[in-house]
Amino acid sequence: MSAQINGNYLEKYATSYAELVCDQFFSTRQFITGQEIIQLTPSAQVNFFIIKRLFELWQEELGKLKSSPYFDYRDIAVHEALTQFMNVLSRRIKVERRHLEGMLQDAVQEAIRVATDPVSFYQLELEKAPAGKINEYLKENKKYFKWNEKLITPLIDKAGIVQELESYQQAIASNFQSLGGSLDAPKELLATLNATLLFDLELYLGIEVEAGTEIEEQEEVFEEQETSAVVESNDDFYEAPEPEIDESEEEEVVTPPVELVVSNVPSGKGLDAAHLKAVFATETYKGMKGILGELAESLALNQRFMFTKELFDGNADLLRHALKSVDELATFEEAVELINSRFVFELGWDIESEEVREFMQQVYRKFVR
Image (cartoon, rainbow, N blue to C red):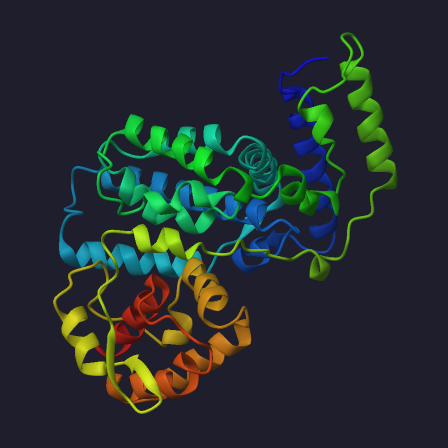
């Protein structure tokens, strides 16, 4: 018996999985869009790892652009223009099969690693962060992690952690020890892959694989699976099971979002336009100077998905309706009143959450001049 991870099996499985998915999707299409990537497979984690890779590629291209010695990329106007440009590009993702298939292979392998060895995965992931900016890296990338993310989310804005890689890596290991049985079992997470192509967890972990027969067994597994595999229609591919948020972890965050609450709404606590304006007016975050075009057309892909999931009960049509309704209003005050009356109480928003804060920032940008 071997306890060694079977890397050959993992690579072959990911290749076969990506081929099956791409054969199905690209049989009638030449390109895939960002929204289609989010719904590409039954595994939300696989889909979001593809989106994460696209974001990383954009960052690499932006880095090359900024390396030019002839232009001042620190200028605020240039910075805001680049931010707007990135938002536009995020809504115009267009990927051919020859590029997507490799990213899908990598995404499948990463998903399997985060399911089976989350400590090592996240410890290695943090090595990608710029020196001294691990907290910022986690904030920027937390939306891409759907499996075992409880190992890292409590570390964001956590006082007492030095901005050093080793400190964060030790904290991840400690979180794993404390969370232990509350994390989802690998088999449960990887079940979303089986709808497309059966994944043999024991073979991957090297259990009961005799020396000299490993390659032969792999070939037999994939021959059987590829012969019998039936790829479901794309409409049936999407599901995004989300782990419950541990409220005790949320309470450990030392630097909470700026409070957005006042008690002047008849039906309870709601958002207050004057307070929001005072908060946002003092901020200098990128792009705050206003949005070009309609709010309904200005959200980045990641924002659209986050708002749909966290604020609008997973109903994309409800988000579109909300954005369209806000676009028809004349003032920020009217928008806040509408959001309070139609969504805050009806949908049970936590108005101190980061998602509500970011949503209201976008609404504020719609009206600020």
